Length: 105
Length: 482
Image 1 (cartoon, rainbow over the protein chains, first blue to last red):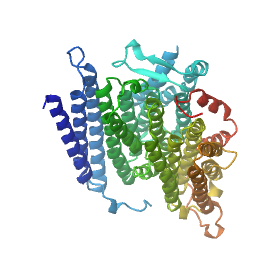
Image 2 (cartoon, rainbow over the protein chains, first blue to last red):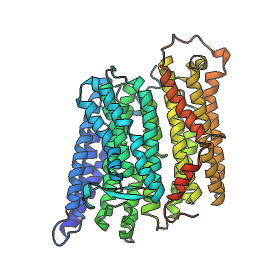
Image 3 (tube, helix red, strand yellow):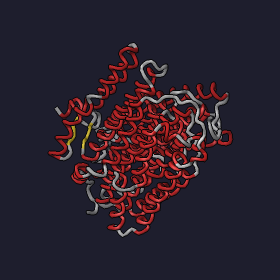
Image 4 (cartoon, rainbow over the protein chains, first blue to last red):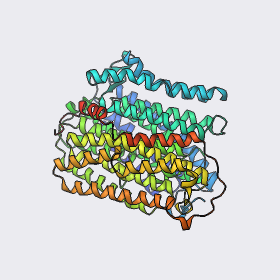
């Protein structure tokens, strides 16, 4: 097994773990972390599957991953801020269907 | 000249957003005007170019792809840009009453609002799958910030659910992009097709990407986040969310389907997307019929109306494409008008529960009129823009001999009439249920007029369709049936 295959397999495992966490975990912070793990899996995949150009690594995927990390960091920060607000407002950090109020008046 | 104009269409609102964030409050009004008002004039330059020569492409700052940023403008993206600019300016007129400069949240609202505007313009211009990812993410994050801006519990929960699903959607999209780049080494939306080789990898990547975009476009059964998010956001935000933000994801689905995948045989996948669209129309309309709150009726109506936009894919003829493009336009105008009118009603009465709205027509005649006119276009009654779009859809289905879609489009129109007449009946026609409404909370006349102007535009779209349809006709995707 060459190293690229190994990375792709690792990415697949991470992506699966993340997806499972996103669906199964109730706590919003865990859901957000799960999304981050899925993001990391995609970044690994982007770098691992790019073909070298003239025996040098292709710079494009690395630029993409760098941009992707910036996007992921901002999205995570925003998500955390939203969770804090939600927690202050409702006293818990979950979204369960059964306590959805029917109306707000 | 055209490159500069295009760059300003994206950067002027962005600079104004930064300005309104860092400059002291008295500068807010100036910044908003700088970010919005020059845009229609700037947009005239590329419009002339597109009408003369079809589409064209620019490389920002002279760097070549793939590290440079390439933008492409064609008739479809031009139509979307005009829709975005026009809609945002009209809705901003309303927002300037919901969030005036002395409102405590005004210094948060306007930067996000201008940034959302700029991000959508950038998305519509991008010709490269990764730039589209970045702009899509910008659109989502600013939109969610706007939903949660008032900090009400229901809106926060809706924003959180939207955030989780939207991030999942963009990650799936990015995964698809990554797989495709790994195989082809290009990111260009229009060149990708030449490099994709046969085998299972490319279809898998495309399928993953489309699922991501379908989540963002809130297509049944991935619509669960939309009604709560659109129904609980502040009025102007609901309007722009329903009129533009979900549409840009549909626009991307069309782009990928009709441009990148133009040469592929995708009959089964097209059928599947058609079925999703049909289910969205039926489910959204039925759900709208049983909602207890006005804004939720309008939000579920969006779920239904988005379904029509997917019908373009299985019908796949030029009439269907024109119908879809016109539906984008007329639904955007009508839906924005209805959400703004609903926001005024909510502000005046203090609630938008249908059971408490009897008699609102006497207090807010302009808003109820705007709501009704918008409704006429959504139902597809002549002579509105909505009628024209549905009529073109019927012709397209007839031409493709897709009788089930003919039936579906007729049923969808009837269901839309049912859920909208239910609202109007409650508001206007129940003298016995008229109660003494609480003392009115005054709505500024201009806020009502903004809603009415959009509604009138939705009706007028039924009369002056030729320029738009000719424009769309001049930029049909390659490989469509005539």
